[in-house]
Image (cartoon, rainbow, N blue to C red; front, side):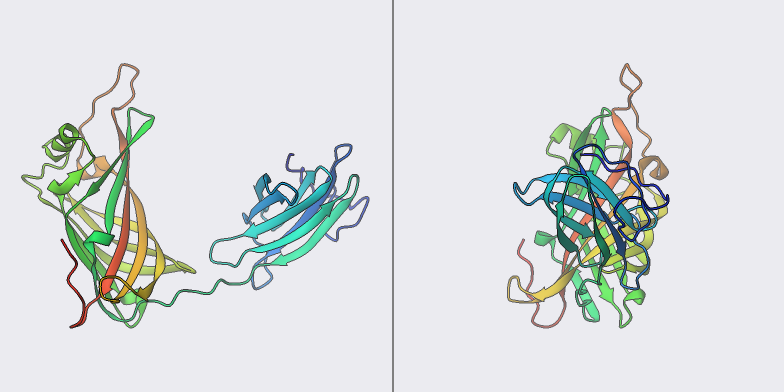
Amino acid sequence: MGLGLLQRLRSIGRDDGLGLSTSVPQGAGVVSCEVVDPLGDPLANADITVKSTRTGGQVMKASTDPYGLFIATLPPGQYAVLVSVESLLPEHRTVEVEAGRRTALGRMRLEPSPQAALPMPGTWLFDPPHTAIRFIAKHVGMANVHGRFERFDGGIRVAERMEDSYVEVTIDASSITTGNNTRDNHLRSADFLDVENYPYIHFASSRFIHRAGAKWTVQGTLSMHGVSRSVSLDTNYLGALNGGYGEELRCAALATTELHREEYTLNWRTMLARGIAVVGPTVKLELDIQAMFQDPDTPTPPR
């Protein structure tokens, strides 16, 4: 089941309203649609998933072209077509594909998703038992090493205008753990973090930028191993609710970035015989955060 070749030619055969022509394999049918945003503008790179309604299995996955168009050749049968784009509500249609015929789903308009309410202004402190600071590094060019920092302090000062908010976190570098004592001791040594001379890793934000829906970019400065660099955290806000130790108000977010360790003078390298580095040049960092709103009734997290 391949994606039909999309061509802007004079329409032939059954008119689908899009002015498209596709070479159809014998015994196959064609399905097409146009995907637009809430303003009616074409949506490029929208995710298209086609499933068989008979088996429930996925038949194909594709995306719209730069004009928001999608066309595919499929065997005869009934299919469910799901269109999705981040920050917009998904749209789905059921279509019956017939051999030798073209079926147009027409224009599919995706509407905005309801946005989670932003956290109320004030101070929110990280809840350590429900917050994780994790990293992933490439090992011997193929496998990944997963680790985390177990001790840290941080919080968010939410402003009346979210873009004016501020987040700060201080990490105990010696709390690094990967599940292997020998490796952890090496990471704490002068070859890597050198925790004796640089005991803390620190991040302080400088700017909150709203991207779309629940997506934000948090820009700031990361200081590690005696070096400070500007970084951007791709952040997905997960909402706020009452719940936890004493039904306290808490919010959550997931932030990720990629660091080049040599920018922080973490230059240790050993090569395998084939010229492959034992430790890769980049590290993926992930902050999975829950924070509690601070007021006189906020409980103290358990240790």
